[in-house]
Length: 361
Ligand SMILES: *[C@@H]1O[C@H](CO)[C@@H](O)[C@H](O)[C@H]1NC(C)=O
Ligand SMILES: *[C@@H]1O[C@H](CO)[C@@H](O)[C@H](O)[C@H]1NC(C)=O
Ligand SMILES: *[C@@H]1O[C@H](CO)[C@@H](O)[C@H](O)[C@H]1NC(C)=O
Ligand SMILES: *[C@@H]1O[C@H](CO)[C@@H](O)[C@H](O)[C@H]1NC(C)=O
Ligand SMILES: *[C@@H]1O[C@H](CO)[C@@H](O)[C@H](O)[C@H]1NC(C)=O
Ligand SMILES: *[C@@H]1O[C@H](CO)[C@@H](O)[C@H](O)[C@H]1NC(C)=O
Ligand SMILES: *[C@@H]1O[C@H](CO)[C@@H](O)[C@H](O)[C@H]1NC(C)=O
Image (cartoon, rainbow, N blue to C red; front, side):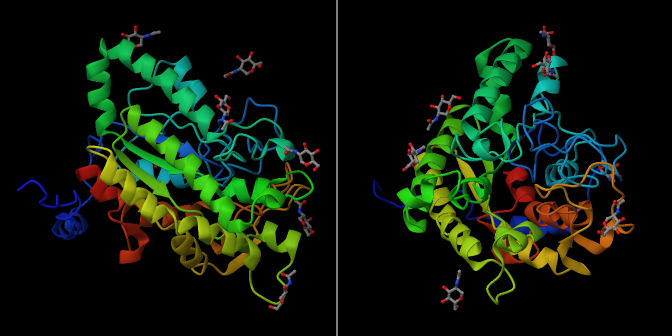
């Protein structure tokens, strides 16, 4: 029948969900051959280290609990990308773009994430200096793909590999906190109301995700925006006006988030073989924070821009704090964030599937 509706690819995933939750973590090979990371400071593992920017975390007390010390991760230890990589079965950390290229180590994936970067080129830049916005992260991915193509001998083999990888994209927060709400530096809030702004961001993001698909990505987890109106930084900067968080920010990012499910659905319907999924980080972020004794104060002493003050001593027990600095989770909380992105705890954590299922499709 010509007009018979095609069943969506995820229709058989509920039984899979049960199977996957019964499986034990098998050791050995990872569940997918490669993991590529696009994003901002929640996922950055050192890509900003060599940039002329204030948005860096390659000094103590960052990395205080990390085997390699300070690496550029905005955390005391592992970040969310590390947690997801580990759950996918990777033994090694996913390398930064510079390191992957320099060591010819691109076949298992690359981390392109850059703190303070956004969907829009200008986000972050007027506030902190150089950053790597999503368009440039995609440019870097093209460079990596040419190295992969060289290594595998031809484009077909490269595409076959790229089709099997997991991709996560965590973008958009800085288009709000490092652009729209920085009225002194940016015009966007005078050009667009919050609804218009979410619409233009989603249009641009949609093009960027389409480019990622054109570069061979099929299994893409699109990470929604966290509750950045509840960060110690937002509370200190804007005040709460009687609420427990800065509602102006939370409301704006939720308008963006609500457009991500329709976006993912549209990409899946229009692009053959595409398996985009949405991770509800707003909810996961909000609930994960509640697992900690200190939910609204940073563990480290802060610098004037809300990062950890260099060489000061952080709080003794990092597992009691939701935030390491004024905007970024402790490793203890990244374990929850990455853990629930990988395997849902509540059915509303992901739509249509979590990363553990995406790996199996
Ligand atoms: C860092 O930047 C300097 C100067 O811009 C350059 O010479 C060096 O190769 C860069 N290092 C890496 C690892 O990219
Ligand atoms: C970070 O992840 C690595 C690799 O999974 C693990 O060995 C380590 O214990 C984790 N925690 C810290 C603080 O490094
Ligand atoms: C962002 O910058 C890149 C070059 O760095 C450029 O190719 C791209 O067109 C720019 N995007 C927009 C929307 O201006
Ligand atoms: C990178 O490694 C591959 C093998 O994995 C090799 O074929 C290729 O020549 C290497 N490229 C460079 C620039 O070293
Ligand atoms: C922002 O607004 C100012 C004054 O209205 C104008 O001079 C400037 O060109 C604008 N900048 C951008 C990036 O639109
Ligand atoms: C503060 O809250 C009141 C009542 O909810 C609201 O009318 C007002 O616009 C808020 N002010 C700001 C600056 O958000
Ligand atoms: C951190 O700040 C607290 C309170 O302001 C202060 O008592 C403490 O000495 C600071 N710690 C370091 C290591 O600077």
